[in-house]
Image (tube, rainbow, N blue to C red; front, side, top):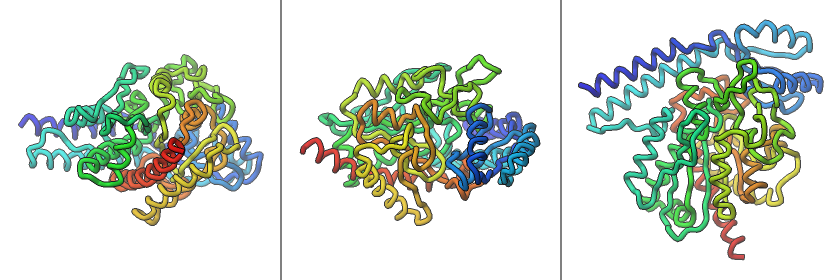
Length: 440
């Protein structure tokens, strides 16, 4: 009976969330169609010096851009767009409606999973393939470590700004392994599909190794894998309790009531040299200095302590279906660019076998998208000399979606599975190449 009461409490809590935190009623998602350099300069100024929320990147003329505009600012921006003769259309008339639909779906999904666990006599609800809470993700990785403490460990690399542990999971089936790889998710709070992807990878890597899947056994006998499911726990928690569309961490910037630093603009390589804002209310605010944020410091300190042992750094984001390589801070290419592209191609080809509709674009951040300094990818490649460093922007595509960051929950398992299959194929190519280099 107690478990049933708890179950209905969770369901009611979800409904309360959807009613009490309806911050985006009549907010619009607007698609802009810049066609001139003047349009681009105007939009870049908006991104740099306002709190306008750009969902897709400013690339250049004739490349559409999706922007979230608050209901009380919509008329003001429409007047500006008309003044600049900037074509636009409304993709979503009420973003809150999409958020409410997502919350209702999550409540229904939880009901199904909780009922299943009750019928099977299980004490915990399965979170694999779902948009789980921070606490449930922490419990999940702790349970994995308890089930096999010889090979799996939870490591607290430090606490967040608000004091939440940033826990990572290490998987080491070969105690004599000296090489490492890193995978992280959830650096941008609203990108819920990314923590779900890391949880999926933890679950499937362990399961497939124990089931003697040859490709996974080969990889995990070579590397120790470190997986960080939620690099921005404060922001992630805030998206679940307050604002579904929050992006940054939760630092009080002590300026105009604005909170948060974009952690993916805060890393200590070419910090604030382009594609980041020094305006504290901007969604791409890079912080008061390089590595100003405790979340950044924790990651930098942990990886620096093992410098020279890393072969791969991967950070999952959404959205766009992009496989992005160094550099973001400039238009130059890394020395091993073609090798990185070849490995990425293995991954995207494997994804396409699973889902023929998934086409990923491969290239450097600056050349595929835009200049963006202070990113994890550039820091890992230049600062730590990690030869394979990338960001994967998960589905949906930027051009065809009207939901953007709010990927429907029923699509999460498929996206997670595709990403996992792609990563295994990618890592097999990386292993072959780094083995040749180390043994050569």
